[in-house]
Image: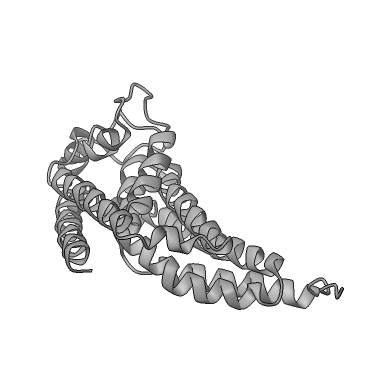
Length: 243
């Protein structure tokens, strides 16, 4: 019986930094989650935006563990891809529509009746439906837990997430697993940590003076994001029906 040698410290560092680089690279495009992170950071504060991003990372981590343990064929079932695609289309359409109806706090900020969006934790008098709480534009009806759950749902039900991790994830993770499964786990941790770093960076950027000085443009920015979400919803629907 031949025992595999444990990975060297150099291999551990290489796996970690390779994962970090891939995680940041995959998080760079302005997709639904990046839009929600920016929007919630501008409206509710740094931690609210980061909570949305962290929820997305939890969903990504779930799929990456499925890849790690060889359960990818379960995700490739046509019925699963169809259900995920239709659910994601509905969520993106709801989100896109809601962005055309900014909350009262944003309207007051746009008119100059408030100086900035408070960094304080919003009220916990929330709707029982988490998606409604953030998507409704009601500034006092969302919490970090709801933001976390919204990020998980928005990413977890997105069929593009499945495609990404089945394609890129399977190949990249397998290359490290061929040396050691532990290196595969370190690589996955690096991916998720890299994404968290990026979401923290854009959440902080949204709280800078430049962004806060542009609060009067926020309703227009939200409508632009709404159009982007609706476009992504239509693209998701097309991909679901033709893929």
